[in-house]
Image 1: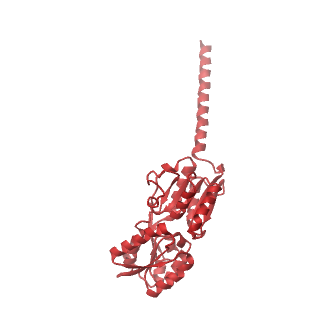
Image 2: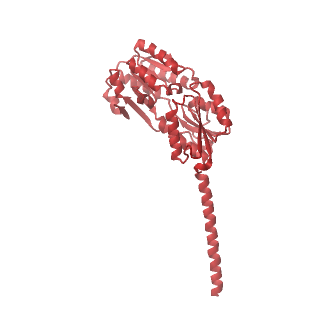
Image 3: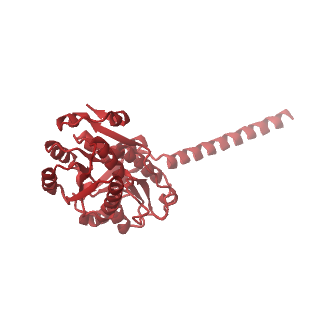
Length: 339
């Protein structure tokens, strides 16, 4: 009897060890799927209508976000970046080029690049970054369940231009006329922004005069015309302007014109004021979408995220340079003061 019991005990112990080994194998396999190593040779595409310089801080924030999720550029992960250099007509060809490489995931910066990517592929996952209104642009069927091969983050710039006009009126008491610098070549995005600017200004009793700048080289002519009329300036957000925030800030400051736009990069480059979503934060969050997709999640099931972090940045050095005293009400509300 003792002998039989001993045999049964040995058999039970062996079975237990076998079951444990099977569980460990399954666990390792699960971890391999859930958290692929950097040796996975992942190729991520990045498409921007702007220049390399204008997209630099966006791309760096995206890289940082990818590193945070275990996908470090250069360690088994390659980022293939393409820039249209402010030529929207080049986006379709660049999107096809990335699709044909091919890439595992395609990150598209703002609306026009996202539309070009959608037209280029219905197979490769597309992660939008900072698209103003994905629904109105026809990119997704729903914000909660986008469907198809597209998901990502919305810049939710709706309301930002109106807020900028309000801030400019508060900074310039008695404001009745203002200039708007815009890019009519970006039809999808700028049409929305212009309509919002006109509605907000009308409600505030401010007359707007629009000045076109379809490329960076036309900015100087636009600001020369604005300076001749001494008009405070609202710059509508656009990828064409992203690489020229320093130039725009200098043109406004040299003409001693108060100015505002949505990008924090503008105030950092010497512009007077900026209010809008933090694109750096949005880029890092976009990287989270890329990581989820690379780990097996379908883009169709990932809800579109809107910004959670908005910033009012005021450059007090610029205010002093153009002879302005910023109202205390604005200084107290600012998230950052550049002194």
